[in-house]
Length: 73
Image (spheres, rainbow, N blue to C red):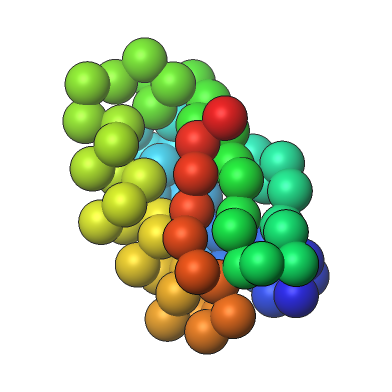
Protein backbone atom coordinates (compact mmCIF):
# COMPACT_ATOMS: atom_id res chain seq x y z
CA UNK A 1 0.00 0.00 0.00
CA UNK A 2 2.91 2.35 0.72
CA UNK A 3 4.06 2.15 -2.90
CA UNK A 4 0.56 3.07 -4.13
CA UNK A 5 0.43 6.06 -1.78
CA UNK A 6 3.87 7.22 -2.88
CA UNK A 7 2.83 6.94 -6.56
CA UNK A 8 -0.30 9.03 -5.86
CA UNK A 9 1.78 11.63 -4.01
CA UNK A 10 4.08 11.86 -7.02
CA UNK A 11 1.08 13.05 -9.05
CA UNK A 12 0.33 15.80 -6.49
CA UNK A 13 3.89 17.04 -5.96
CA UNK A 14 4.18 19.17 -9.15
CA UNK A 15 1.24 21.36 -8.07
CA UNK A 16 2.69 21.82 -4.59
CA UNK A 17 6.15 22.56 -5.99
CA UNK A 18 4.68 25.19 -8.30
CA UNK A 19 3.69 27.10 -5.16
CA UNK A 20 7.05 26.54 -3.45
CA UNK A 21 5.91 23.63 -1.29
CA UNK A 22 6.08 19.89 -1.10
CA UNK A 23 4.94 16.80 0.75
CA UNK A 24 6.94 13.96 2.30
CA UNK A 25 5.44 10.57 3.12
CA UNK A 26 6.18 9.70 6.75
CA UNK A 27 4.14 6.55 7.38
CA UNK A 28 1.27 4.42 6.12
CA UNK A 29 -0.47 2.61 8.96
CA UNK A 30 -2.20 -0.75 8.70
CA UNK A 31 -5.41 1.10 9.66
CA UNK A 32 -5.22 3.19 6.49
CA UNK A 33 -3.97 6.36 8.18
CA UNK A 34 -1.37 8.13 6.04
CA UNK A 35 1.02 10.52 7.79
CA UNK A 36 2.68 13.20 5.71
CA UNK A 37 4.80 16.26 6.34
CA UNK A 38 4.11 19.40 4.36
CA UNK A 39 7.38 21.10 3.45
CA UNK A 40 8.57 24.40 2.04
CA UNK A 41 5.91 27.06 1.65
CA UNK A 42 3.21 24.48 2.48
CA UNK A 43 4.66 23.91 5.95
CA UNK A 44 3.69 27.33 7.26
CA UNK A 45 0.86 28.26 4.93
CA UNK A 46 -2.45 29.20 6.57
CA UNK A 47 -4.23 27.17 3.88
CA UNK A 48 -2.20 24.01 4.59
CA UNK A 49 -5.08 22.18 6.30
CA UNK A 50 -7.31 22.80 3.29
CA UNK A 51 -4.53 21.59 1.01
CA UNK A 52 -4.16 18.51 3.19
CA UNK A 53 -7.85 17.57 3.39
CA UNK A 54 -9.34 18.85 0.12
CA UNK A 55 -6.30 18.17 -2.04
CA UNK A 56 -3.94 15.49 -0.79
CA UNK A 57 -6.47 13.37 1.13
CA UNK A 58 -9.02 13.50 -1.70
CA UNK A 59 -6.48 12.38 -4.30
CA UNK A 60 -5.04 9.64 -2.08
CA UNK A 61 -8.47 8.21 -1.24
CA UNK A 62 -9.40 8.15 -4.92
CA UNK A 63 -6.14 6.45 -5.94
CA UNK A 64 -5.83 4.11 -2.93
CA UNK A 65 -9.25 3.14 -1.50
CA UNK A 66 -7.60 1.60 1.58
CA UNK A 67 -6.63 5.08 2.82
CA UNK A 68 -8.96 6.13 5.62
CA UNK A 69 -7.50 9.57 6.36
CA UNK A 70 -4.42 11.73 5.97
CA UNK A 71 -2.71 13.46 8.90
CA UNK A 72 0.02 16.06 8.97
CA UNK A 73 2.91 15.50 11.37
